[in-house]
Image (cartoon, rainbow, N blue to C red; front, side):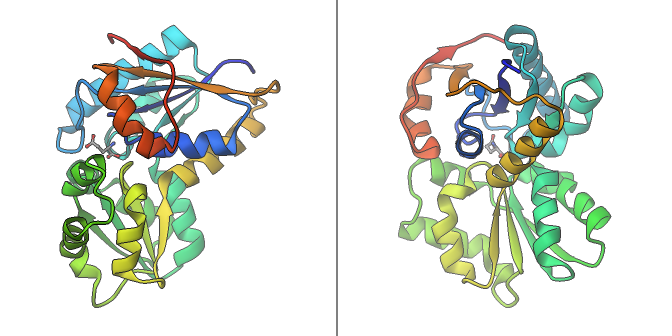
Length: 264
Ligand code: DGL
């Protein structure tokens, strides 16, 4: 199927998810929309994040005829996914279920930690999915809102970032979890600092990697895979592309070409 896969996020962070999708599915075409005019979503209400998510989904479906929608933003996945799934006929993949699936395979009855934005943690979406799938697991979720700004600043491993990571994750110090779900688009770039604090005994779950696995399976199962290669990415933003291009490079791991500004 020639149609592209739609991917959206509040801004640049979702490029960590896109990077995994492109690596796993090199023949697919992707349209990525970063809502840079309205970022951050992490502290906004469920109503607002849901409204923004619907506006973006409408744009990607009506203008780009996407065959599948990936909600790369963990906050939007936690707050808006059920509504999006009710509205649209195409498959909608969020970040919560793929991460919980992986946690179930790894943790069993052990401890599962979740870190994310205030909105993600307040929603309880991860805990709910874990309770349903892994009832015996011990779960602890911690909001780490400052990590978003540190990651965008490019401070991925300096003393300040290490101190902030240590402060947020201090409840895990005495009893590190078996797995930690990195429940925010920005945290994969901070993996080193997080791993150094928790030690090798904790497996870090990257939502982009897990979502890419799920999308891969879904496209195969539904016969929607694109057969011709190679694929590519079109980048859309709702504000000036300059900052997105500069910061996004770190998150995507490559130059971003073909960025267009759109009005929703
Ligand atoms: N993309 C958001 C998330 O994964 C982080 C940035 C924001 O707060 O918008 O939750």
